[in-house]
Image (tube, rainbow, N blue to C red; front, top):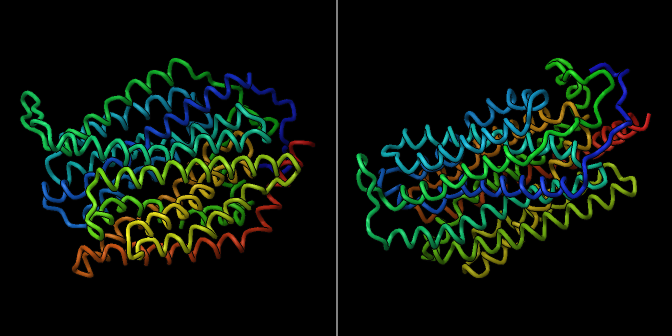
Length: 447
């Protein structure tokens, strides 16, 4: 992008009450996306038994199946989000991933389930880029971190609700009479669970379409109303490559560790003999409580610091969260009792929520408005390519390689240590470049 261009300083944001309604609704969308994503983790053991799968194949369903098109479709989706109706793109995405989740309940082979998980990933590609682009246009920069933090609450809330409610649903379905669909036949309990979780998302898609307005794009470069070209977007990111690389690298580890948490119910079952109903309540409560405290607290602190002129405040929060996440994620699988593991897991979730709750604000803080869809899509492309794509199957591979399912705890610890070390080193090296990029964007806005 031409360095001579300046940012518009005539931004007028929508009514704040309606803006917060949109933020709450989009947070609900993110909750839904995580419920549809995480329901698989409660069904690992019955799916393995039904389809005769290995831990590595389960890892492929958790990571690569979901991410393989999530990352490749993400960049074109981001390009569309910077030009077309975000409301339309998001509502279509919700409908797609909801239908694909429900269809997982009709899968009868590994490859059918794999391809349907690919479809879930394609639909969910729309959620975060559309939401963050909208937040940039609904909220001024001093309020924005709180809106982003509210949205990011959807991750722990969605995962937590999946474990708490989903665990009870799975147990209830196991004890209920067989569910029979005409012309298809009797379904396993895990197949019924997918149907019950996926179909309600269609109502949320309609709600987004009917109530979310398309706002005027804010903080754009003068003359960029037609939307930046891919070359301009690429040029801007290359110019600030050290800042983007620091954020991307720092969050890759968080993503890998978070994606590996799909294995938590299996860890509790294999190591301490807990069923999904029991482990689901504990894990889900930890995810919700730790997620709420970490995400809202980090968002509040970042917003307060930004009002004081500390434009790289989100970066500080990401680094602080990772300092807590690294050791706790490494140690919690190795605890001798489920009670100690749960206490350590709470600290891990707290650190992960601080990091994930403020990392999108890092992208917004260094990216002009008309590039945020593409920058956010690139952000999720990179972190999912090297995080979600690698983390879960690597855990499964290491467990299969050890030849003992109970060695899952060591696999989780090894993966957490490797990615945790990488992310903290990367963030430490990027402090100066990120601060310069954030201050540069603010100065262009004032000019």
